[in-house]
Amino acid sequence: MTLDDLDAYATTAWRLGHSREAVRLAERVYGQLVRRDPATAATKAVDIALEWLTRGDLNIAQGWMNRARRLLTGAPTGPTHCYLAYLDVVLAVAEQDPEELARRAEAMRHLCDSVEDPALESLSLVSQAIAALHQGRVADGYALVDEALLPLLAGHVRVEWAGDIYCVVLNLCHKLADHPRMRAWTQSMERWCDVHSASPFYRVCDVHRLQLAAADDDYRRLEDQLFSASTALEDVNSWVGAEGFYQLGEVRRLRGETEGALAAFAKARSLGKDPQPGEALLHCSVGQSRKAWTDLRVALAGAGPLDRMRLLRAAVVVALARDDIDEAQRHCDQLAAGAEAFATPGYRGWAAHARGAVLVRRGEFEAALDNLGAALREYRLQQERYDIAEVYEWMALAHRGLGDDTAADTDIATAENIYEQLAVQPSGVCGRASPGGLTRREIEVLRAIAGGATNRQVAHQFVISDKTVGRHLANIYTKLGVSSRTAAVTWAHQNGVVRKDN
Image 1: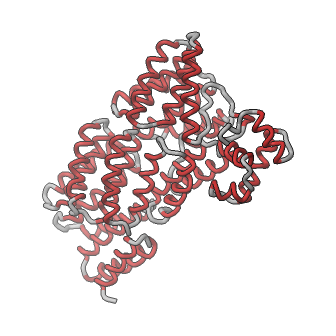
Image 2 (image 1 turned 90 degrees about the horizontal axis):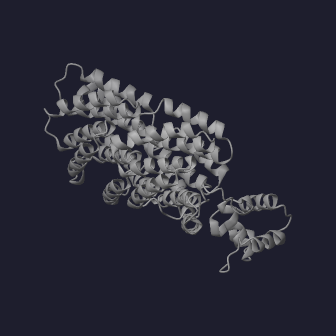
């Protein structure tokens, strides 16, 4: 096989999702180039570094970047220098160092000014956008991203680098909790993915789409889709694969599936993502608030400005669960400062939600309702239905505190209806335990059994194994204090678990 054929073979393997084979072949190409054409070998080394970076192995990626630097020593500035500079920017993002990120983005801009190349123009604009967003200059960052996507959509950027641009931009948008913007850019990526449907980035499109769907879709459908998409990305793009498993953990956490959530969070950790704050919130929900608090404090100590926002939001929840109102207030104030600095709709919603919750616990019900109403407006813009339901639960407590039981009952009914549609557990804000302490999945299994379904039919309905159905039934019997299927069904009818339409 000629060198050109071997190179084409490596590229084809990567675009078909065979990343291990692609890297092995690309390294063989490099080995032949380095002896006869150092400049081209440097370019190949940068491409290999991108593949390792995408797979989540920063050390090996940096090793290949260093090889490229050595080969470029003394060479005039060219496109390869610029691609290498972009990888430096991506590493700075991973290292969560805003100042170094800004410095590297500026260095790349100076490099690319001397090279006329639409692809590098796009990469340079994205680098500047990333730096601006981390500095809180959100409007500037969004404008730069919009401009950077033009060469990409025109087909001027190679698939490998174009896919990386989309991944970096959408991950940032997710961190900023700006779902309208993320939705627009995800739709753009989906159109791009349709053109490159054979590439591994097609699965990346799935994960980002499912992250958005988690805001307002039925969680029963999301579980299998997230597992499938995330598993497919494990050896291709561990960054997005880890995000997918983390989101799977969140879906399971909100459905009350503790074991499944812990397994998904553990998988995210193994792929390089700290599963906070989801794992801490899970521990808090099962009464381990001290462990939750410790985990969050450790995560906050090493978090960058964007990751810190999501952690602060969870810290308010955990502090309230520990009845530490002053601690909750401190984190609430930090969250509000971040929301003011970044000014994204999601952050504004989080800050107003947190303020409202703290005010309810302080007994300042009128002020709480004002803030909770502001959170509702932001969440409706975001289409965040679970958060909307939780806000209604806090509003119920505020209305109850003001003596308006009718409004409180309406709030609770609204929240419960949303939880039912999403197929998740109630947040527990109002202190309303689920019937018999059953999880949402256990209630679904019990309703199916009450409707006459066999274990195998239940397994088929919920796409789970017969063994899992048996485990759910065993848990149901234990929680209800019964020993038979008939007794469990009788309990379900007596306690309103089985609806009239069942």
